[in-house]
Each structure stands twice: as C-alpha cells, then as structure tokens.
Image 1: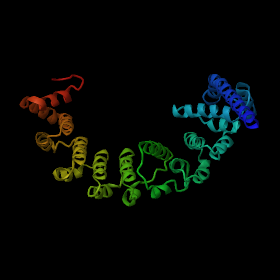
Image 2: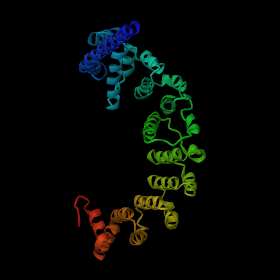
Image 3: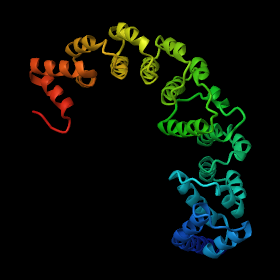
Image 4: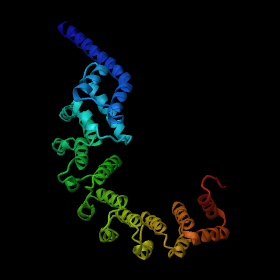
Length: 347
C-alpha cells in the first residue's frame, strides 16, 4: 500500500514539475521580443545603462533571473552574433547578467547536451576565457563530448589551439568538418591561423589530412606547394584528389603538365580533380587534352565535367565546344546541350 501511495505521489510531483517547467518556457518564449528589444538598445542603439540597471531591466522582463531565463538571453545574443551584428557592448551585457557564471554551470552540468550547448555558445560569443574549462572535457570518455571539447578548444584557446590535431584518431564527420571550419575561420579573423602544412605532413589520419588540405585552399595559405606535391604520391586516392584540387585553388599553374601526365594512371576521383584544376588554371594550354579525354571517357558524370571545363576554358574553349557539338550526335550531343543550357531538358 505504501509503495502505491509513494508511486502516485511521485507521478503527481513529476507532473507538477513538468507543468511548471512548460508554463515557464511558454512565458519566456513570449518575452523573447522584449529581451531582443532591450539588448538591441544596448548593443546597437548606444542606450546607456550601468550593470545593475541592465540586470534589473532584464529581470523586469523575465521576472526571475535564473538558468532558464539566462538560456533565453544567451540564445538572443548568439542569434545576433550569427547574424554578424557587430557591437563592442557584448561583453557588457554578458557581464551584467552573469552569463559567464551561467555558462560555467553548464560546463559542469551532468547533462551532456548542456555541456555541448556551452561549448558552442562560448565559441559564438568568443569567450576564450573558457579554454581551460573546455580542456577538462577534452579527454572525456564520452566521444561526443571529447570531440566537441577539442573542436571548441581550437577556437577558444590562445595557447596552442591546434594541440589536438595530433590526437584525432577517428574519421571526421561532416559535422566535425563544419565545426572545425568555423573555428579556423575565427582564428583567421583574429590573425592567429597557423600554417596547416605541419599536420598535413605528419598526421596519420587521412580524413583530417583531406580536411586540412581543403582548408589550405580555402584560406589560400602559401608556402605549402612542396607538401601538396608530395601528397600527389599518397597511397590514398582521396588525399591525392584533394591535393590536386587545392593546387587549383592556390593557382599553382606550373603543376599543370604534371597533372596531365598523371591523368591516365589515376582513378576517376583524381581524374575529375585534375579536370577541375585545369579548368581553374585556365591557361589555354590544355584545350587539346580536354578534348581528347572527353572523347575517350565512357563515364557520363566525368564527361559532363570535362564538357563544362571545355566550355569555360577561355574563348578558344567556347569555339572548341561549338565545334565538338557540331561533330557529335546521340547521347554525347545531349550532354553538351545540357551543359550549355542546363535548365532545358533534351531528349
């Protein structure tokens, strides 16, 4: 009997707590426009408050300044940051509302989702004072927490932010790549982006190497030509392909003949990369080569890429494309017509 009564009491308690939580969430959600208006006045309209005044105004809106209301405050600030709305008053708002302490509590939470939120919020708000806090989670047994912490450390730390590149031992997911790219962008904006060649050269993790080679092209890092050329002989075709594409991104045109010489000995992924890079170089020296491989390849997707390269390969390429179109029939002609006017379907 006691067990039944206790169970009923527990259910009622849980229901009451959940109902109160849901009511609070609805209330705070309705207050978001007012929170935004207050923060916009301080951040973008130069309205002046001292820390106590801002805290009290926020409290008047949300009724109680606690974990839940501060989550909404952080969400609003993160939203502004993601919209690239600039202000030198973000730190004032953060300090006035005690958001540093709020995020510290989230870092120490038992909830993994709260920890992950804290990593991402600290990154967006550019709170690099949390680098030591993040570091404590970088060796977590939980792989998701460990990865998030290491990725965040790259953005938040000013003390050897790249230290974990040496310790990536699993393949990067697409989400990992998106996060790492964001963090590298932040380091670049700060003027702290190091040359990535060191890790490309020595890392045994092919997925990290491929990602970093791509980032070299994205950030147009110089002085890495020799490393990229060495990667053309890597055992992994995907590494070779990314190195080829990055040669194109960096405009290292004196490698063009080297790439042409390699074409017939490479798998399709590298052949496509070579075509894209030659198109990027656009030197006018390889038009004959592009025409030859168009006629030789039987792969439809590769044929499309080659045809597009010919069409966009200077004025001579456009003439060659038209001549090619006039000399072909059947499916090859359909490919060329589609490349020329992709929105029109041909039979």
